Image (cartoon, rainbow, N blue to C red; front, side):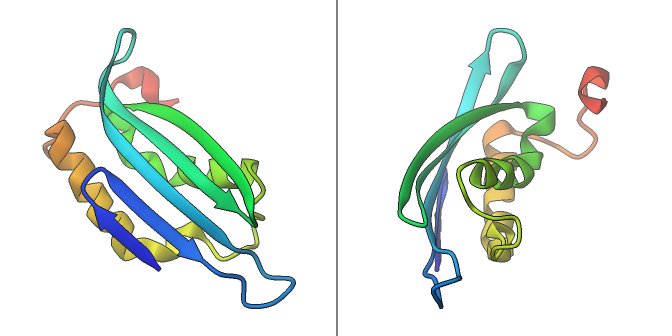
Length: 120
């Protein structure tokens, strides 16, 4: 199950067997002005993975904000979601909505410049 509202995505999955994994996670995000990187977006991943609470945040500069799914997946793995578990990316339709919302909130246009130091 997934529910999207601008600035928020809730993803929930219940284990189907004793060897399966469950999670109930919320992704909250908003535009943030970082003193070093400038305008970007803060992301907060919080909820539970297999019943264990987790809460973690990260910032991505404007030109990297669309790489949020990779960062969210890494955080979920850091907090106990196995790599072989059903991917959070299985909510692809909702990530598409989130992607468009991030684009709108940051006022990103096709062809906007990317900082060369972010390409390494």
